[in-house]
Length: 104
Image (cartoon, rainbow, N blue to C red; front, side):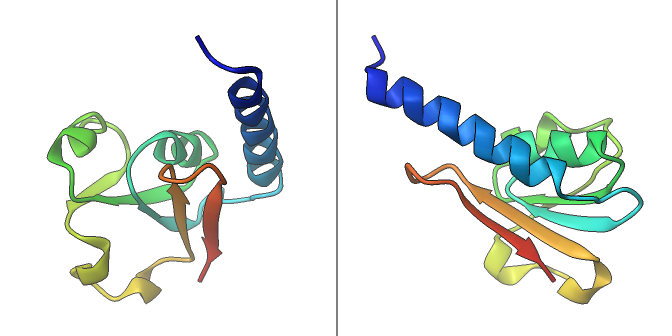
């Protein structure tokens, strides 16, 4: 059973993500998405040309057939120059705070 604090945290996290996505115009931009997941789906929905990077083959497999270009590698050793994109996005699920890096 979830505690009230965890539930409040999840609600607040969703609100923050909604605000970030509301103010992020990525239509027709090329976006590198470091770490495949919800951000990949959202970027595709918003009309971005997505280059999705992850070292987890199973996570990438979920997006086979989507419009995203999929690359399996470690983000420290990407096999191309990052300046091929207009924007880079990384949303970390590893902490209790949403850590996002949006920029290029």
